[in-house]
Length: 537
Image (tube, rainbow, N blue to C red; front, side):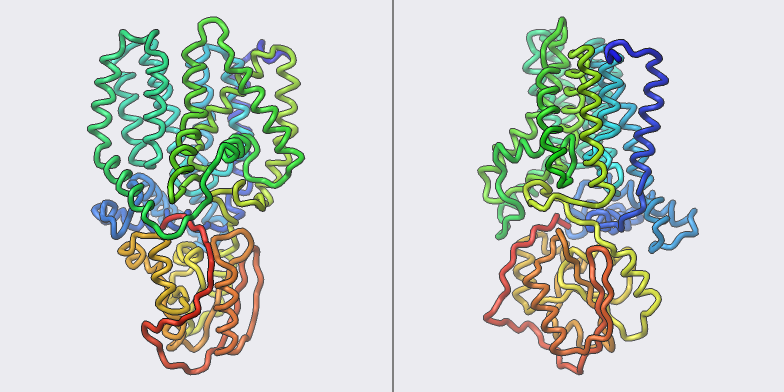
């Protein structure tokens, strides 16, 4: 099979899009909503009071995610008879990112075709996007990432069209897509920067468009000024945090990120190593300038590496690093397009290369669908287990009695449990220093208080309860195991354990406490050392 001479491109595209749809539909409701998805739903409640989305004591994220999630979850609740603890309900909620994931497969085809004017390259890029575990992962997560990729692809398409045709509608689309993108995710400033670097690199070819490009960027800066101000303010705030969340990135971190573009977060070393090397080689081969291909080569090369290199330079030197692999989702799309170009440029051997990519991707997909994450932190920066809070909530629904209280040792559990079981619940703190520690680690004290993410001193937390339901997460989560061990040991010293239930990644224990006097603001000399690394609320 010669990948350079495929017939019936529309039929091939339809098959690829159907494949993308099935892969993103499979297991869509299998895993419980995790911390970040619960946060999306919590912030979505502010849709009824839009001003709250711009109040930093209630929301520190760009507003689009909360608006989109709030409207969609409201629609699902209004039209579906399912309960929030049903897997079907989670399935329906995640149809929103699924839709964008399927749409993006079509847009990858369109953008690649606009760049290279090659049907085989566009189809190959769409296929690689369809099967990429990294892309499937975030097409099944109730966050803004799917829309982020949609708007990024539109921005590149409009840019390519504006450079080639110089029509006002393309310039307007370019500005509008990037403006909306900035109100989806503050990391969008890196895409804006990268596209400007690409234009400067191509200035010799497009110098006649310099003033239009300048005018478009001036208008864009005006539209996104409030978001830019907030983004830089947040960057300054996190640099003052007392505890680092992640290790400073190095050149090796960047290569791991490139590996994840093709293999995802799975631990199957024998598959992801050759897949990484093959993909890197194909991408490099695809960057050859063949004929008048300078523009797409520069754009794809910049999109793939400039955000990575820039963030490694920025956060590799900073006291606080916020380098997460998922921030580079769109760089991953560019890498897939570059590898697809390399496959097509190989000619007949390209079919063998494509087959090898598919064979090596299959075990990585298996890792994803079975919920297996890489055991080394650097390979999963920003990603944790999706533990079974849904089953915990079902048990609580069935056995809850007046006077019961739900308690947990870490804020990792808060947002999902707010969603699945919005009853009397509280995070346990050892003493007042627990609160001080979390504020120093997370910042945004007003928001933490408003969202009830700060712990309550353990004696106060259980004083009025007749029964306690203690939730402990384990595995690769944000929870600090030494601190959880100490909290659990204390509970067993002041209460009688009645029942223990184990679920995937989480344990639920029922206690009957002894009568205790509340203890207000008491400090102790002992403090369990820990280094949790949560996402910001």
